[in-house]
Length: 156
Length: 142
Picture 1 (cartoon, each protein chain N blue to C red):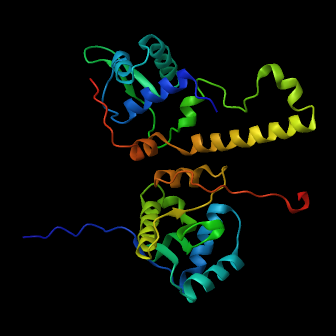
Picture 2: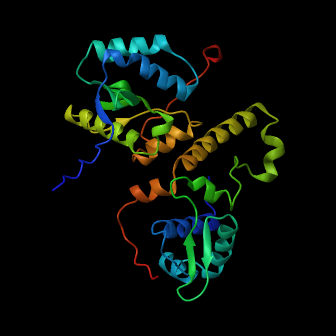
Picture 3: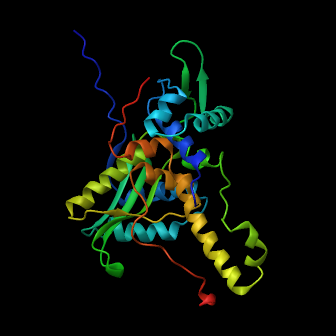
């Protein structure tokens, strides 16, 4: 009697490692059109090499290829905001989009935030960035009780 | 942004059809469920057909069915068929709004509010709205 092959579990989610730096930098470059190697070296130094409670950097891996990532941290008491999970980067390789990878990454980091005792997850996205806005809407995020404000410094 | 009656009726119809894409519904069914004018809704349905969001099915069991891409069509795509989505200033006052310092500042506030509204409408697909809608089922014939 032959045994049916086990179904492919799909990409694996795991903590980012130092060796993922180049792949993550490249993924971000493809998505944003702007290479930021210094920024990602700094993020890896703070979120991967010096691991601290409340900081999470997860990647999705298919075979040996990094096909997505999400980064976030628990932030607290900014203008009275109780501790909440902040997601400040999420990305999936173009060829892997609409396969649920981004949703799995977001769900996983949300679980880790919840394990640390926070009840809310928050992010900030450009209102021109319809791709990421639609992604976060699809995850159930709506406008929150805080408003982002800014001005050009010379206009103060 | 003020949601006009036709836009609201269109959203009712498109979302009701999109939540079960294989189902066919008559205008009267949708009008009854949402307690709205069937006559007005019929006009709205014709616009939605022309836009390719729904299609008319003839014969027994006919009616309308969803014809768009539920994961791509946004609330903005539906509403813009029925009303202009631009900053709202009373047309009779438009000549004055940009001509003074205070008028210009108020116009900037209005544009800011409008940009937020448009970004919100562009970011919500029919699929997202239906997925996160409160689970209050409406009895629907069809």
